[in-house]
Figure (tube, helix red, strand yellow):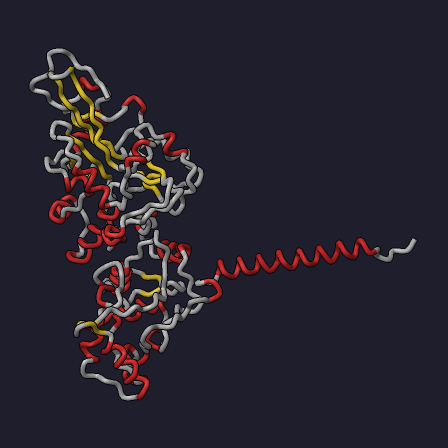
Length: 218
Length: 262
């Protein structure tokens, strides 16, 4: 009796192969989208209505930036929950006189100046880059206070497991989760940085701060 | 610093002698906690959301009649019947003595509501809707619960957390009874009550306004032994609520005897 595969078995094997490939593909998609944030990096660096290069504003003067502190524009970051995007008035505070030196800068700044209505500036619809679910209340202020507190007795564990007793600056604290925004001409989330609940909990446990659900979920 | 905050044990005392049944607490709660607006239909179907409600009882026969009011919110029981039945630990007791509902854990089995003797848990049968003009009135500190989620009174935990942060930021201190009083860190219902019938404070605070009532009720099982007017709702169920009610003192009781009608 020969062991040559019959036609029926070949068909079955073919169907099995197709099913395996499809199931494997679906599982791969699900797993990658679960472990990457945002899924597949989609919407990582959304196009903004006006190009705002953080390199020019927050970058160090040595690198050709202005060296403006994060909390100068994101004013609420040391005062409350949301870091807040500055009002157009605050942009115009400088840009009423600063017109830009390069051609592209002049074009973008005039775009900013022209979004007015009867002389009043209109708010700009900035695209959100970092997004948490609606049932989480992340308080920026408390985190900045913890990392910048001048108390040398606190051992602070950073998100990457690094320990420090030296208080950080506000700017350094921001980079823990947001990465080096000052070096980004287009803002995108820190590469490989998960903003899932597990990351929050790991950091909270290592720093011995409350992990009660109502600290974040209210 | 959040790391050395006080471990509170919250408690509420409701003085029924002061309650006039004005429903200010109900309205305050409704707007503080992003509760959808109840329609006539939702009342008829017994699916109205009221984290705190005023129950009204009539005593006596017309015209010799008296209205009795009792505000009922989540009792934050120590032995909460709702907690052990949740299959996903969406409701649990936290270290501040309150019964917490975690919306993103909830899968909507409704076991907790069925097991609650006080009828204070509400299930979102529909996606909550507000008129367009009210969309901007939503409280950003409170999650908007979507369809299929159980919800209930949280002792306004968002106000407590905000109070803790404010005290920490401005004074570097902790939220204790003194700072709570100065900053009005109170649940919305307590703050809104015009007759101060509701009192909210830390039970652990020796000099706090609720301590003596909790001590009295905890120490004396029988009503007759108690020195205060304190009692708990459905005390015989041994749920040990963190809400204590103070009996009404009726100076002019009805002569024709009480008749508790709906």
